[in-house]
Length: 120
Image 1 (cartoon, helix red, strand yellow):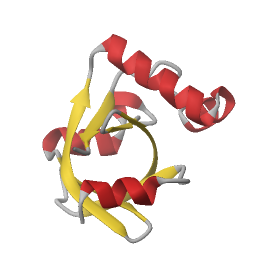
Image 2: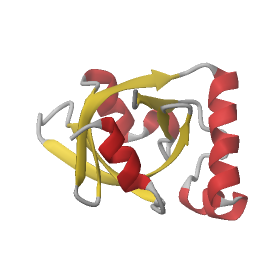
Image 3: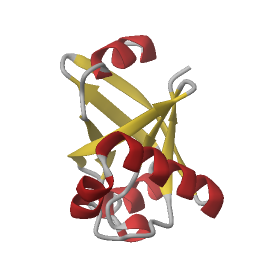
Protein backbone atom coordinates (compact mmCIF):
# COMPACT_ATOMS: atom_id res chain seq x y z
CA UNK A 1 0.00 0.00 0.00
CA UNK A 2 0.98 3.62 -0.33
CA UNK A 3 1.71 6.26 2.26
CA UNK A 4 -1.59 7.87 1.28
CA UNK A 5 -3.43 4.66 2.17
CA UNK A 6 -1.75 4.66 5.55
CA UNK A 7 -2.56 8.33 6.15
CA UNK A 8 -6.22 7.68 5.36
CA UNK A 9 -6.23 4.73 7.78
CA UNK A 10 -4.77 6.90 10.54
CA UNK A 11 -7.76 9.21 10.67
CA UNK A 12 -9.49 8.86 14.05
CA UNK A 13 -6.74 6.53 15.35
CA UNK A 14 -4.66 7.11 18.44
CA UNK A 15 -2.07 4.43 17.84
CA UNK A 16 -0.35 2.57 15.07
CA UNK A 17 1.37 -0.79 14.95
CA UNK A 18 5.12 -0.49 14.48
CA UNK A 19 7.10 -3.53 13.35
CA UNK A 20 10.87 -3.51 13.70
CA UNK A 21 13.54 -6.14 13.15
CA UNK A 22 15.11 -7.40 16.37
CA UNK A 23 18.74 -6.35 16.43
CA UNK A 24 19.78 -9.60 18.12
CA UNK A 25 17.20 -12.15 16.95
CA UNK A 26 16.48 -10.77 13.49
CA UNK A 27 12.79 -11.52 14.11
CA UNK A 28 9.96 -9.13 13.32
CA UNK A 29 8.63 -7.52 16.51
CA UNK A 30 5.43 -5.46 16.61
CA UNK A 31 4.42 -2.81 19.14
CA UNK A 32 1.48 -0.42 19.37
CA UNK A 33 2.81 3.15 19.50
CA UNK A 34 1.34 6.63 19.58
CA UNK A 35 2.12 9.05 16.78
CA UNK A 36 1.75 12.62 15.61
CA UNK A 37 1.55 13.78 12.01
CA UNK A 38 3.03 16.97 10.64
CA UNK A 39 3.66 18.12 7.09
CA UNK A 40 3.82 14.72 5.44
CA UNK A 41 5.74 13.13 8.28
CA UNK A 42 4.84 10.80 11.10
CA UNK A 43 6.66 11.10 14.42
CA UNK A 44 7.02 8.31 16.98
CA UNK A 45 8.27 8.78 20.51
CA UNK A 46 10.01 5.85 22.23
CA UNK A 47 8.63 5.51 25.77
CA UNK A 48 12.06 5.04 27.38
CA UNK A 49 13.84 7.32 24.93
CA UNK A 50 17.12 5.99 23.56
CA UNK A 51 16.89 3.06 26.00
CA UNK A 52 13.72 1.74 24.28
CA UNK A 53 14.26 -1.65 22.71
CA UNK A 54 12.33 -0.79 19.55
CA UNK A 55 14.39 2.38 19.14
CA UNK A 56 17.61 0.38 19.40
CA UNK A 57 16.20 -1.98 16.76
CA UNK A 58 15.53 0.98 14.44
CA UNK A 59 19.11 2.17 14.86
CA UNK A 60 20.43 -1.17 13.66
CA UNK A 61 17.78 -1.78 10.97
CA UNK A 62 15.88 1.37 9.93
CA UNK A 63 13.49 -0.58 7.69
CA UNK A 64 10.13 -0.69 9.49
CA UNK A 65 6.51 -1.55 8.79
CA UNK A 66 3.57 0.52 9.99
CA UNK A 67 0.02 -0.79 10.13
CA UNK A 68 -3.34 0.75 10.90
CA UNK A 69 -6.51 -1.18 10.22
CA UNK A 70 -6.01 -2.92 6.88
CA UNK A 71 -3.32 -0.49 5.71
CA UNK A 72 0.29 -1.66 5.80
CA UNK A 73 3.22 0.51 4.80
CA UNK A 74 6.91 -0.44 4.65
CA UNK A 75 9.36 2.43 4.91
CA UNK A 76 12.52 3.65 6.58
CA UNK A 77 12.68 5.34 9.98
CA UNK A 78 15.04 8.19 10.74
CA UNK A 79 16.22 8.82 14.31
CA UNK A 80 15.73 12.37 15.58
CA UNK A 81 18.31 13.36 18.19
CA UNK A 82 18.39 17.16 18.02
CA UNK A 83 17.18 18.31 21.48
CA UNK A 84 15.12 21.21 20.12
CA UNK A 85 13.37 19.02 17.56
CA UNK A 86 12.70 16.29 20.12
CA UNK A 87 11.25 18.90 22.51
CA UNK A 88 8.90 20.14 19.76
CA UNK A 89 7.78 16.57 19.05
CA UNK A 90 7.14 15.99 22.76
CA UNK A 91 5.00 19.14 22.86
CA UNK A 92 3.06 17.87 19.83
CA UNK A 93 2.44 14.60 21.71
CA UNK A 94 1.27 16.56 24.79
CA UNK A 95 -1.11 18.59 22.64
CA UNK A 96 -2.54 15.49 20.99
CA UNK A 97 -2.76 13.06 23.91
CA UNK A 98 -2.74 15.36 26.96
CA UNK A 99 -0.02 15.90 29.53
CA UNK A 100 -1.46 13.40 32.02
CA UNK A 101 -1.75 10.59 29.46
CA UNK A 102 1.72 11.29 28.14
CA UNK A 103 3.17 11.16 31.66
CA UNK A 104 1.38 7.86 32.32
CA UNK A 105 2.57 6.07 29.18
CA UNK A 106 5.96 7.72 28.77
CA UNK A 107 7.92 7.31 32.01
CA UNK A 108 10.83 9.45 30.83
CA UNK A 109 9.70 13.07 31.37
CA UNK A 110 12.43 14.36 29.03
CA UNK A 111 12.80 11.98 26.09
CA UNK A 112 16.12 12.32 24.32
CA UNK A 113 15.09 10.91 20.94
CA UNK A 114 12.19 10.49 18.54
CA UNK A 115 11.70 8.78 15.18
CA UNK A 116 10.60 10.38 11.94
CA UNK A 117 8.89 8.61 9.06
CA UNK A 118 8.45 10.41 5.76
CA UNK A 119 4.99 9.81 4.25
CA UNK A 120 5.56 11.67 0.99
